[in-house]
Image (cartoon, rainbow, N blue to C red; front, side, top):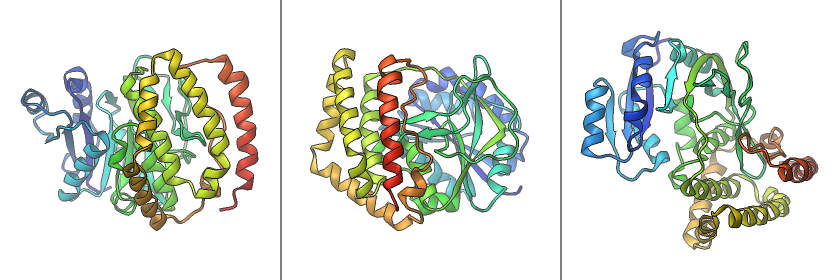
Length: 350
């Protein structure tokens, strides 16, 4: 265990004032050689006050100022700096966390356990009650992402079970060779779905993603849905679908995609998010948006080692909004969509 690790944290506005103390103290307590890891805080809506606060309260961290709030670009900036400092592995972690003393050591052990492993995710527990936040994340065939194991009782897990979907951006480690091969974060995403993008690219490039169950992080998770969040999650869901699937796969899922979109459009009217939904349509009416998607599809084509059939075999046909229990979703939408997906994924041969 002699690899150098760069830990990337993103501060946004008042995050540091709210969350830094527990995060910092638990990083200082890591059972890992201090000379083998560096901490990078990307100050992602930087001001003189935020920079001074970070320097004063976490003097050993390397502060990287940014102004535009782009989360994906912030992670690229942090990793770029870590590469320049000779780091071999990069950890993406949330600031609203507290880490177990063995968190870092166990993440490194997991990613080094097999040369085919490209990413490893920590076991993420809810800070308030130690129930499970994520044991890996699940991808729905329409581009939604969900946590696996949410709110279940914590339990012992042995070995390094493979994550069938993607690693949560709350806490995962990625090898430099993998990051270089997949081309880093897609900065067009801005925020949300960035971890789906990284995980999907890594799998297309032939790497495995595993859970490191002894690398434990406590997440101060709270479910909040803002207009800005709705816009990026909906927009980025489509960017992911149109970027990664082959054209034949897109044609096969298009009826379900249209039906879901009409349902969400109706839902947005009653939920007060119609303006954000229309903004999503506006994004895809711009030719420049499709040019960016085309260029990213070409990048995916260069790294692709496996086809859609192998990637999508573990995708979910159900929409699992853990915080929302909607009877229409449970008893009508999910059964129909799940049946549709079971049929469609048998038709996809590559």
